[in-house]
Amino acid sequence: MSEQAKIVLQQLIKAVETDQIKLPTLPEVALKIREAVEKDNQSAIDIANLLSQDTSLSARLLQLANSPLYRARAEIDNLQMAVTRLGIRIVKDLVVMLAIKQTFKTKDKGIEAQFKDIWQTSVDVAAVCRVLAKTQPGLDVEHAMLAGLIHNIGSLPIIELADRQPSLFSSTQNIKDITNEIQGELGEKILHFWNFPESLINVTKHWDQFTRNHETKADYVDIVQAAILHTKLAASQAQEDWSKIPAISKLGLDPGVRKLDESLQIELDDTRKSLMQA
Image (tube, rainbow, N blue to C red; front, side, top):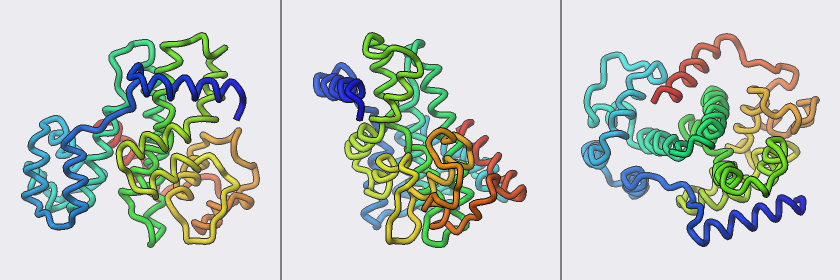
């Protein structure tokens, strides 16, 4: 890590500890639903009742449940129907995803556009993650999509600090370079703060380490790395020869194919559109 990146990281940690910058928080209802589902003794009615406490999240969940992403045969017009049709665990991940979108919002016009750019990147990667996860029997589709959404969440406090203390940075490119160096550590802190599982914390720590290798089966880091490559967002970070990238091999993907099959494009577009509109 460069000396400047270390200074910025120290400033960020100090700003968080003194409440000058707050780590992103999830709505209380999203946390309650996640906790309830993990207890594994909740009914669709229980989850629907919790959801009803947050009208914004409820409305957006119904919108997502009726989107092309889930291709409902008949309109889903109430929360209990949504939970029953989609399943409790899928709803849990969807509610967290919808809640995360709120962390990319700010009243500060100076950083709003940058937050939108980061969110667009997250959505693009998440959409590819969802499509790729369907080819992997050991990975959950919604969990993979969530992994794509949170992979770069550590960049949010950096952008906020850059707006508050521009003297720490010399240029826009400098901000991007430093973000690449320290966002993993910040993302890890945020997900620990949210009490997220290790499978997702590992994504924030390792998504940009394209030489990463491991002995176990393909995991969510592998999915996110492959998704990033297919969205062409890592051209400067990944090797040209995909056959040397362990994640591609782990997922059983053809290293010579740089584009997803055309048959998957409609689903990819539907996923991206649904996430952006929800």
